[in-house]
Image (cartoon, rainbow, N blue to C red; front, side, top):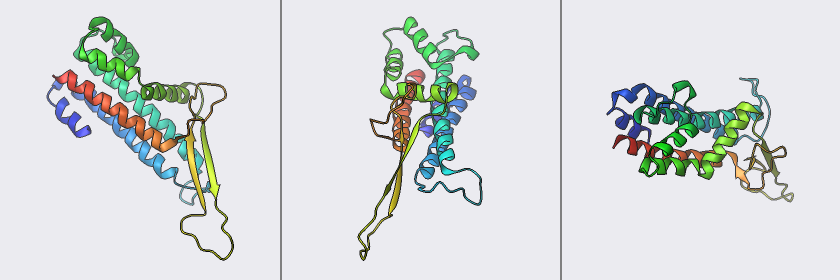
Length: 210
């Protein structure tokens, strides 16, 4: 997808700098996700010799970073739409939500408007928005580590680890008492959100360059 963006945006010089910003945000989200996947596979919370940060702090950091960069990519996309469709919003005040509203008022029946509203109304966008808002404006996102231990009968050998762990991300970080009833595996859910948001972003970009 990123290669497609590079080719497509290269067709329009006026998008050069802003499109580079979009690509950078998506790559940063990719990096945060790759590090998050590594950290969540660790069972022990021991601090390694090479650094002084326990695994739980790393998981929290890369989770917060992922949502910040993923959600920020949509604000950069909004700036591209603001420029190409001449919506008249000041750059420092441009946000994805503002652009969707402005574009809807300008061209309610256009395919671009339909795609923007579809993305804004999606569960993936709403959750990414909540997680980013919680991390930047409230507190750390509520994560829950669950450890499973296996104690086999003496005298038997079993394959696989005797101790495993998993990380869940809360259903809604904006409530006072967050829950994990939906069982969202942290790294898997982050990856799913990124894939779905990138797919929507790709469709929007194709409409912009037609």
